[in-house]
Structures are given as C-alpha cells and as structure tokens.
Amino acid sequence: MMQRKNLESLLLSLTISFCTGLSRGETVEQRPSTLSVRQGRSSVINCSYSDSASDYFPWYNQELGKGPQLLIDIRSSMTTKEDQRLTVLLNKTARHLSLHIADSQPEDSAVYFCAASTHCSPDTCCLHSNLPPGQPPGL
Image (cartoon, rainbow, N blue to C red; front, top):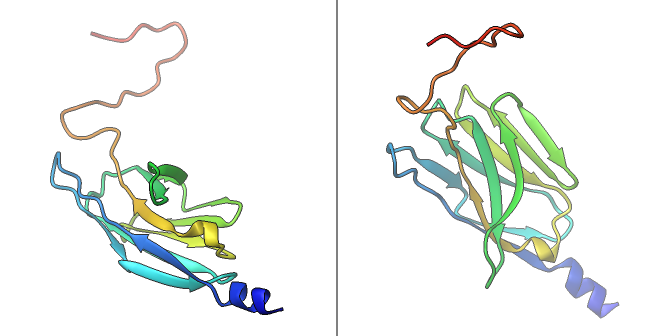
C-alpha cells in the first residue's frame, strides 16, 4: 500500500527547450520552460514560431543520456493530430502549436523540443501546377 501511494504522488519532470532557426532568423519559443506533472494527469507544452511560411512541425523528446526521438509531427494542412496519449493542436493564424500528453507516466520524463520548418522558402524552390497527363513541362 505504501509503495502505491509513493507511485501516485510521483512528480514527473518535463524540461522544455527551445530551438532557434539560424538560417533566416526564424525563432521557436516554448512555454513553460519546466513543468512538473503528477502521474496520471495531463500536461500541455506550448510552442510559438515566427515564420508564417513554416509548414512542418515535429515534436521530439530526449531522455537523459540518449539522443532526441521524434514523438509526433503535424503538417500545416492539419489542425489536430493524435497518436495514443499524444495530441498536437496547430493554429497557423496565431503561429502556435501545443503538445498535450494524457495520463502522464514516469517514462514521459524528458527534455521536449518543438520545431518548425519550411520545405519551400523564398528563392529555394518554386511551385508549379500539375500538368495534364502526357504534357511535358515547359522550359
């Protein structure tokens, strides 16, 4: 009985980090910077980004002594994505996304990272309309 009570009162520590886009000055900021959650409770990590052209948003976590692992990602064409106990909400207008972790467990203790990337940035690619079948691209 005592062991179960200790387990239920265990606080999980989620350390949140932030990334800065170096190539064109984009920034990504996460809040809160640290978060303690009781086992079984939900937690939310918020992320804001500066580049409105960003279209891919991965979330990573990194356990002590290990490399970063992709947890879940979302593309700009979606507003919500769920995977087991994880849910990502994306608001492109507000340049904001959030990671929701349901039923927090001790193995969720890690450093969490959000990122924002642009697959087509100015002067690096161009978009073309789809050509009808059999029509060669123009030069």
